[in-house]
Amino acid sequence: MPDNPELLRSRPRRERRTGGKVPLLPWQRIVNPFAPVELLSVDQVEAIHQAGLKILRDVGVEVLSAPALDRFERAGARVQRQADQGAAGRGAAGQVRLDPEQTAELIAMAPSSFELHARNPERNLVFGDRHLVFGAVGGPAFVTDIDRGRRPGNFADFQDYVRVIGALDIVHQEGGGPLEPTDLLVETRHLDMYRTFATTLDKTWQCLAFGAQVVEDAIEVACLTRGVDPETLARQPSLMTIVNTNSPLRLDGPMSEGLMAMAAAGQPVVATPFTLAGAMAPATLAGALAQQHAEALFMVALAQLVRPRTPMVYGGFTSNVDMRTGSPAFGTPEYVQGQIATGQLARRVSLPHRTSNVTGSAVVDAQAAYESEMSIWGAVLGGASLLYQGAGWLEGGLTASFEKLILDAELLQQMAMVLQPPTIDDDALGLDAIAEVGPGGHFFGSAHTLARYETAFYLPFLSDWRNFETWHEDGALTATQRANRIWKQLLAEYEPPPLDPGRAEALDDFVERRKREILGAAER
Image (cartoon, rainbow, N blue to C red; front, side):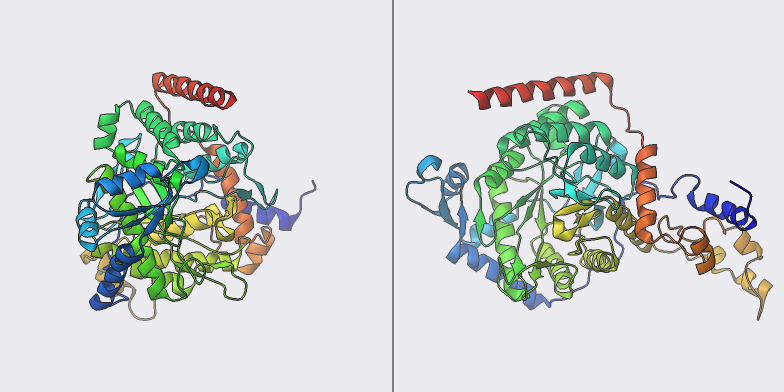
């Protein structure tokens, strides 16, 4: 290529922009120093709380699990079993009603805070006590990036996505599968997912909850990779999962069994109703919150019946639908109000609480950014303990985006800096520097500035603050295009933290043995 003066002048700028490591923040626990916003009055919170208790007393929750119904029945709840359910067996479904006093007694057993133990103890997490945990996206059926477009989830993308999560220290926790690896056998794919989490990350990760067996397999994987027995794991939990109700007011069989298996093993559950106002809940924020409260408390109560003091997180996912189309709407004013109010309800019952970073946008664009920013601020203002779906969620949760993962990581890093109170002391006040510069001067060359210029302010890794001419010379890349470059660099550079060879071998043996058992049982 012939030398070109304009090209030569642009090369140093391009090298400064793309060369070297991505400037990411180091791993840190985050404690929210802000007092939570009180959107609702004390009387209004109490009115919603009492409404939730009345729903459980008068309407109840339909449960599609005989063992769960048995638990409630033995505890003295009013259980009305349905007639013969065919293949499901008689009494496998029924309506459960809880008296307010019993509900309150069971909820009081759950701890107000707890610690989750990672393979690397330096990455243990606290839920509650004003700690804020950022989790990755979990559960989408599709994956996308701007090179290959939207496609069904597959195991190769799954592995790559987990590696990028591992590279982003601002993401504290994996979210239970960033995308569904649909090219793996349904019966055994959870084992490949767990092995990927356990060997690629030294952070905590979430397991699946659709049945007892997938939970029990996760417990074995956690024990093997940490080198502990189940009793120790119960005292020092490592796993977490999301259990959703089928709103309105139904808890299905697999979710019931998964919740009970987690509780039996002493592992925390995030009890999360899916209350979309106007569709699965009343078309008012008050009504949706009352139903959310009832469903969340019901799941907490079931866990306590299985094992008192089981750690639980009150999950809130109240948003609204677009009344013109019926599509879920996210990052809306109502969603933010729901986040803040959920925090108040969770504090009313002394539980940590979960919310999410969500958007309804189908692509990584301005809508995705501003709806996510609204969601993150709603979580912070509401005093959230867990920001689930914190990085990578797109298209209302249908899709995991590589570029959105990077965009969200930038937003989360910025929020982490907002939550660090500034230093206020004589040195920081800079009175000598102000006197030195005097009226009409500038601080670029002052000793005070020169001592701090490399560390004074947050350095973004995605934002581009250069002027138009320089940005244009350097390719005129949008934030989405820059995010594309960044995730590829992080993926190429990431080295999974080492796992003890003996534990890795035991993990492989377990996974392969369980696959043979599961597939052998399916053939019989």
